[in-house]
Length: 341
Image 1: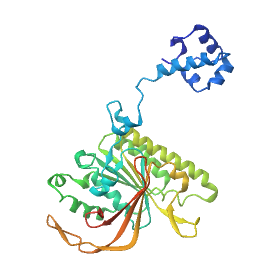
Image 2: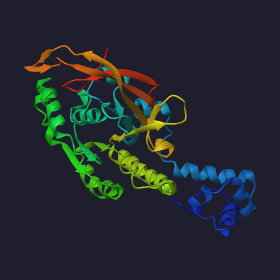
Image 3: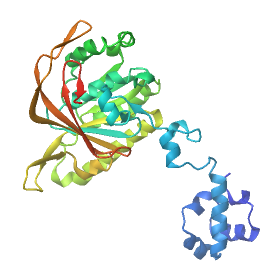
């Protein structure tokens, strides 16, 4: 049903609308009430009645409130329900109210050695856990744009994570991470538009990581090309949001930082500027402090954990639709990231 002929309204109003070419729902809904009044010579009440009649025909689902979406009530369709993916650390999950969102783009930004790649590797393992352990019971797609994939570090983490319980030992963590290396934006677009849909359509992958998104935008553009760069960033983000919505998976993008010259005190801000910030759903900022902590030497099912000094790092929620601004302190040992309680 898309024609005004199917509406139960006054025939004279139908005739007036058809005379000026307003015979379909789309054409009427895209014009303002004042424009339709002027074109069809109808009163305000008549045009309002037409729009109301069309709205009743177009809307086939009951209205949803923000509470319905947040709580995942029966009225909320599966495509809109918000899930959480564990970060691999119980304390951090508690602060983040369950982990990162399974909808939209989550940005992990920070300077070198702040733990960005470590954070992403833990997500790649957590996503393979069953839902009752905070995972999505599926694999991960990992796109590298800078360095080679850190397979050695991944193997070390898997060695310790698999010792946590019998259920962890039964998961072949290393077999469900699909890796792609791309050198530039064109290759990244080919991967996202052609390769990824085939992989995601199987339902066996529920996490997408791009490490890092900054690399493909920081070197190939001159100052005169900033408008073009912004347009390409918006296009990439739209494609990622579409994948996240269609396949119900979290998209994690690693971003670098740059020096801010706007204040007297030197500070770090995420790269790519406001044009990219507007495309991101959530932003988590990681930083390495000058303080160190001696980790005690303990045993985990026969494996040694700790026994060395490590830097204290911070995780800040810069913005997120479900969280206030907050900061968590953590360290990195052989198992991965651990919050300081």
